[in-house]
Amino acid sequence: MTMKHTVSALLAALLLSGALASCGSTDVSDTPKTTEAPVSADTQATETAEPELKPVLPEKDWGGYEFHLLNGNMSEWMMIYTVDAEEETGDSLNDAIYRRNSAVEEQFNISLVEINDTTAHTMAKKAVAAGDSMYDILLTVKGNALDLVLQNYLIDYADIPYIDTTAPWWVQGSMDSMSIANRVFYGISMFDTTHYDGVRTFFFNKQLVEAFDLDNPYELVKEGKWTLDKLFEMGLAVAQDLDGDSKWGEADQYGYCTWSSVGGQTLMTGSGANLSVHKDADDMPVYDMNSDFYIDRLTRVTEIINTDGFFNKSAQSANNGGVEYFKAGRSLFYNETMGNAQKLRQMDIDFGILPGPKWNEEQETYFNCGGNPYFMCILTTNADLERTGIVMEALAYESVNTVKVAAYDEMLEGKVSRDNDSEAMLDIIYTTLVYDHPIAATYLNTQITDNYMFKGKDDYASFFSKFEKKINSEIAKYLEAYEAILDE
Image 1 (cartoon, rainbow, N blue to C red):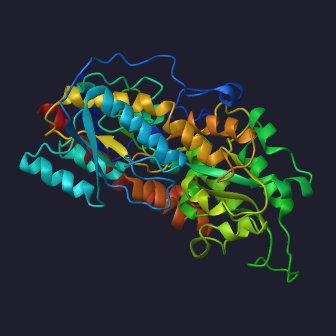
Image 2 (cartoon, one colour; image 1 turned 60 degrees about the vertical axis):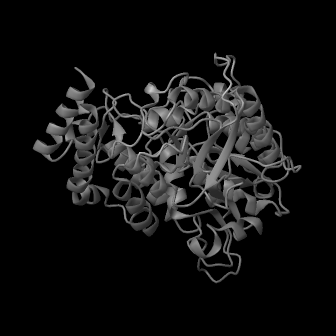
Image 3 (cartoon, helix red, strand yellow; image 1 turned 45 degrees about the vertical axis):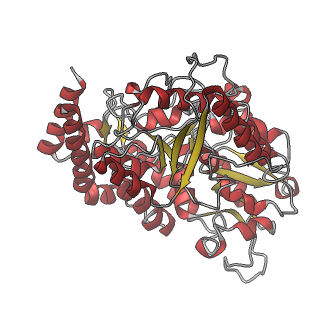
């Protein structure tokens, strides 16, 4: 069956049935529902993304061509959000970007020009509508990228010469999670620093681990025993009513603090059940979260979060997800984005980094939520796909021994984490990234985390029944637009 026929068949099924119950009810065992290849805990602890291969790129001289990168990211909470650097300043990440870019500029006689604008998505749409080929690469979040795909404004990566998305300098989770019918229109390479910053991760207080004689979290991870139940057990072990008023309030000590969206995404993704549409055997989007597999995990995470003493409910938006509690030593775990961990730089208490916990010990793989970094898109008005592909591949490859190393250094040399064991944890985190798809994200992600999970509501069967029609309608709308792309 061709891709076009696959799209048509699935669209017809959606429109006729109004639901995809058959897709949601298949294979509801404890096998994680992600597209990542399984990696054992032992393998994860030693794996690196260092490439054994080098891209085979032709010699080119583009005579000083100005290669324009339109970057919509202006998020100052990230460690660094730009992709260009004017000069070396002594900052490790800035200097790594400068050296990487200089190497590619010299190799192909080009000049990289970054344009930073929060309206980059709109600027890109206007450029395509006007037939303007000014922007060689667009960097934008996945929701904006999907919007551009549906309007047929983006080039399929398979049509861009010299790109090898299976190479280790491309983030495989971004390809697996965002592909549709095995076609990729936007992805992430080592070139983009925001994929380091956007990851949802765990930080733990070493002092509390020692004081309460808890299991070593690093050893738990390495042994495959870092699970949702272990998180719950350890969190409750340190919970204390410090002010003695028999109530859980701001003055007390907790097991866990986070934002609702970050916490929900981290715990569900770690349990092999990320909050998203998923894909069938033909790599087509399906709605299956109304199955027992997902409802069991949603119910358990909701129960854990709303157990007295475990989660600090007073430490969300007004306290940056509870960062001040964690810095003060009154929370064992802090669940945040890696970029926001800069808030911990002045913390006096030693802490470490952990991946998101697994559902149980039988789950072979750790999974980590990649969040919403800036994906690389190529507009249909691109004037030279060969040049673009060569530069994209070169930038990705050159980033491995420059930007990746500097990003790790930034996190490991006293600015974020403070021990050597954390490097092994980072390798696990960054080799097991999973991304939530933007289709129906409002219903399958933020509605769940903000309006149900963190409010103690666990009637998920009713939730999915209420939104099932809207979710399938969004999938159908996407597939209809996608089929139109295949027709052109």
